[in-house]
Image 1: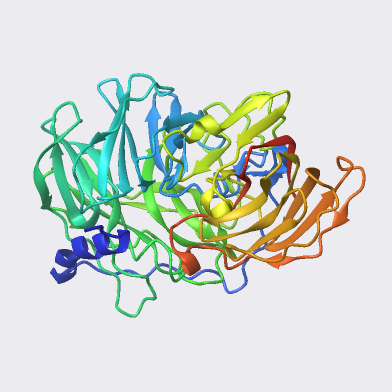
Image 2 (image 1 turned 180 degrees about the horizontal axis):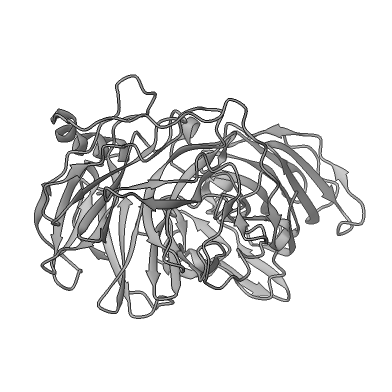
Length: 534
């Protein structure tokens, strides 16, 4: 029987709900009554917003757009991070930084579709890199892959046979034993090579529970991360549900002198929580602590941007202060204002260009297929400065479109498209196969996509080749078409509003992504793809 994410979380949390907790429950400080307006972001590739303000400060998000469940590794002077990539493949894109603020993609670690990838864990042990990967599949399970170089090649996935848990967090005990801490306060032992489990999961921790009058999605203990620091093991966990009410998701902490417990809950829990829907960042949680290049401490976690659930859960950076009683607190407040960067390290360019001249095939680092079949990558090739994409299915819902992650509130993208006889192709804003919008065409008619279904089909005066433009202006969608490669544009007579194309409406934990599709017969050629944040 297939187990949903929510069912798995609720089942594993029942023991924790039954336990009594005696720790003090200190409510976080409320935000100011009148929030101070934040400055605008500095701009990078394609005018995309970037965190580094260029003056020794940064402004969240750290990595804009859907980069949820961040898992971060400090490896000498280098930092590596990856995120849940769900049904996008190639997946588990590794990002690299040397200052904790500016990040560039290295490339994907996972090429084979093994299911919907939830919160992974990136770690290094005895010179080898590991990725522990929970997936929603049939059945649900967790895999491990490994590599001797972060750039890969990465091994084939190895099934750990963990059908009832998610969000593994790797830990090494004081005795050298290796463990995965799991959702619901459980853990399972690993073999010394980290490639198999030993025995069955066991319950070891009853997480702190919030007051009953708080607006949350559900208890759902998840995302356990272990840090060893000055004689303690710190267990950082998320509770409250990853979406739902903006005030739900939160960060809590516990500690123990031994990896085997007992675990003492922090008297100041929750460490982080959105307390008011007026705040800039909603549903903040799933935190990992990391040491900065100057020996300062920081935390990465995710949150939804107020008013922009469509952008998914974005990665945030929060400064950490260790207190005299051996606990820690986060000092960035509601993260709406600039924060002083970590000192030291080496800054570099941030992000990547999303515009594409298709001189090279950037599948993985830039473009990803949605729910690809085993041979999906063979559909795509570059030829003469064009992306040639073999048709698949009859509509975006069945065509496994190619998608980007765009993290700005407003943007515009355009491309010249040429179809074969019997083909249909176009540009999309795609959440999943049941929720998307866009504009396509065959040689005789346009096809309008809205709410994940086909709408109007007015006559197409341009035949099998035209240039198309999509503008997403803070959820207001406009389409323009050109029959002369963009010299003259005409607005297409159908506008849309997409603020409801997100997880709290549809489920799935995804984001609304720009993309291309090719369906029907033959091949479609995509040329001169241009993206610009507005």
